[in-house]
Amino acid sequence: MSDPKVKMQNARIDADAKYFGKRKTCKRENIPGHAHSLTFSCFRGKPFLSRDRSRQWFVKSLSAARDAHAFDIWAYVIMPEHVHLLIFPRNDEYSIADILGDIKRPVAQKALRFVRETAPSFLETMRDEQPNGIVRHRFWQRGGGFDRNLVEPSIIHSTIDYIHANPVRRGLVESPDDWQWSSAVFYSGCTGCVLEPNVASLPGRKQ
Ligand code: NI
Image (cartoon, rainbow, N blue to C red; front, side):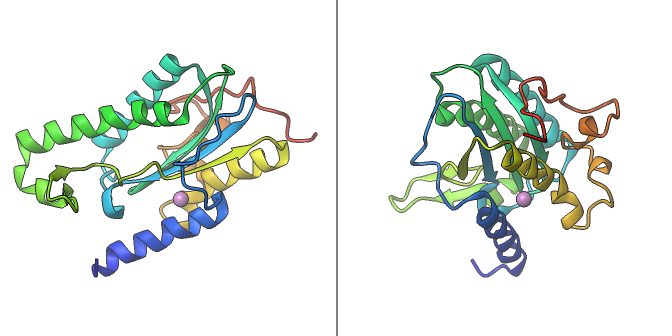
């Protein structure tokens, strides 16, 4: 991959990974009472989430997965080429792999259907030829991304702040709550958040 734009995007995601912990989600720890800070990217760091259409697909999918898997959403941000989520599974038994699958799969399916019907030439940017020669079209980067278990309230709150500050650090907006595609809108007390987080289960800032 020599595309400098893609390289830059991947560097940003790596920088995030440093903050969020290097652990890949292949070794998940589904521990009761733990919150999970999840980061995952679009295929090859491409900005597939730069349009409202795909962002809406994501919001809808996240909302449906929350209902199906009984987790609380404490924070999220949809960036052009990656997503950060902070979730708190309410049940003792849960699977982050299953949760992530149910969040990501419907978005990929809708995107592929849309591209095939309206812009088939775009399929090339989603093309992934695997080592075994099989070609697949991907919306999401292969693998689960990053998963960090959180328990400590102060770390939970600094993670929420970090998530909400993403669009500001990128220079997309001046204030976190100017970015429509995050839970910062809700935290600042504004109405019209695209998906309201569940803050009742959130530990207090001072503990
Ligand atoms: Ni980020």
